Image 1 (cartoon, rainbow, N blue to C red):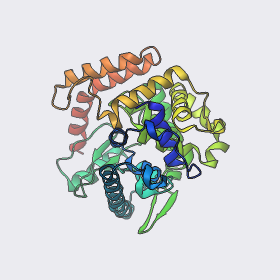
Image 2 (image 1 turned 30 degrees about the vertical axis):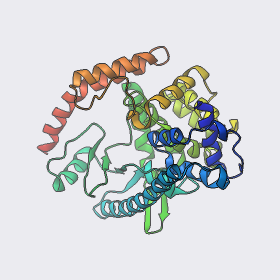
Image 3 (image 1 turned 135 degrees about the vertical axis):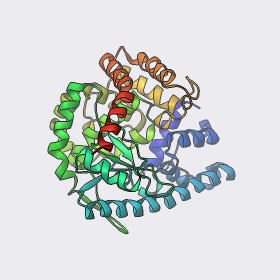
Image 4 (image 1 turned 180 degrees about the horizontal axis):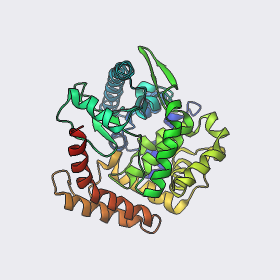
Length: 364
């Protein structure tokens, strides 16, 4: 099945104004379902099936699998929404103003939020690293500190990551600028409240999200990989009218943090896959880098979970995993030499930093 057929179905599923799909004969429904599962976008493609005439729909088996996934997504989103309200209230009560990154905040941008495939809960409390670490360690003494977050397994079956800061950049100079900007914007993110059926929580503003989520996408691209769920989130994010008004300021920020070239690649993906109107472009699309990005997304799936080029690295040594990461990223040297170097150096230094940090903060 051609990529363009897949992309056309994505557009058909997302656009309520489209009532006919012109390449039904080219669709391999089982392959499309497998693709959507690997990319974690099965739920949001379901409206495309609903719009088809009865005789045009896929087999009962495929329809049943798709319908089951939609039901799972709805149930899981309801559970996560309840957990988000509970945990944000808990942190606020204990003196931590906070906001929820990505996840359920992003889901609210979708036409049918409960159909988005949900993920973890990423919580960003406004406090220093030591205070957050000690707060989590009080309930979970064995928790280990990572560079920008730690796990807080307070809900059975749901992953909660508590962030010291939303994201980091591998280049030290750009990261210093980025973290300084994050601090100036932090207070506003904790007052941008949105409503859910069972309560409310704070999510980042559109301005903050445009910059932060671009940094998040690029970071994971040079780490394990990214999928269409992250790109689709960004598609809905930049179609916000507020973003259009701020495009000049956003371009300056993306450039100041060294994200502008990668932004060009993302704009190309949004243009080719989603037919994003050019009035929403944050940069002129770059075909060469953008095509490379599409190829990687199609090959690796959500967060690189289907990347088979280097085998199963989960149980391999750190040196083996570092070697595989470097080998993968060297393919991008032509376009992002600095990022390839700094991503590798950051990974090299992490075991030493984690050892120092966990010893240092455990004593505090």
